[in-house]
Image 1: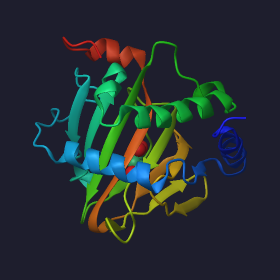
Image 2: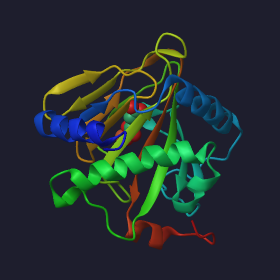
Image 3: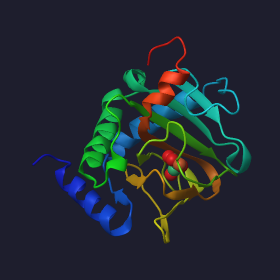
Image 4: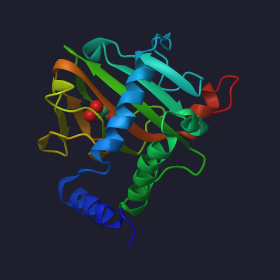
Length: 222
Ligand SMILES: O=C(O)CCC(=O)C(=O)O
Ligand SMILES: [Fe+2]
């Protein structure tokens, strides 16, 4: 039995009972801190946001977006398909996305399966002080069927506030530690409360739908 097998069993069990799952300590503190520091550097670089109204896919294999409306100020940097190889500490990121894929394969329901040609997509999401993520579902063009969120920031050190809320259908609050992974279905309403100090960062992994990537692909193959 490999390292993750029992975690996968617990994840599926919790999913069936509560409609979502939290995996504690998928990554060690040391691994998480290496990843956090590298990704902090990535997101702190100056970038031009994808145009307003474009979906998550703006024709680029790596693209940056800044949210509008109630979640304004939230920034994300998304890597599509093979661009995962250029992410800092790509082997660590790969362990996370592989874990997500293995869980997806065990969950009941065809809605959770990706199409064979859909593309892996991983977003670094940063919420600075005074910002939050409003209630939403990850539904729409390019929405992935199963969302897995790896928490990178240390509550009380890197940030305060910023609790994850999910309705499946009762509302639950999840306070995470770095290295924890939260998994939930694409149609679950979720939100993040205001970050009252510092900055909160996660890596969120899913699939972009093939139709969306085909329609919107720019010159560069991802
Ligand atoms: O930052 C989070 O905990 C959740 C972010 C989110 O809404 C998502 O990954 O779909
Ligand atoms: Fe979301």
